[in-house]
Amino acid sequence: MKHLELRYFARLRDALGTEAETVSVPLDVASVRDLVAWLRLRGGAWDEQFSGARPFRAAINQDMVQLDELIPDHAEVALFPPVTGG
Image (cartoon, rainbow, N blue to C red):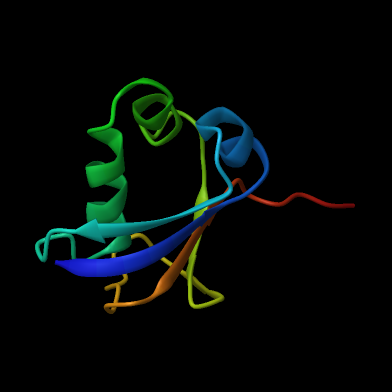
């Protein structure tokens, strides 16, 4: 098992009802894409928020990453909507 600290921001935090959690994921959850697929298995809001219909971004240990980025054990993974500004 791989141990991760997950953090959710903005609409994800609101929709999922949590701002952070510690999870143990199977070793085959190697990338952010794999993590998102694993989270979708929870169903409901998890599946809805990470289905691809609504965009989101990810960071590992506070560095922005692409979905294919590999996640090391004991990493902090943040998931959040894209930020817009003016």
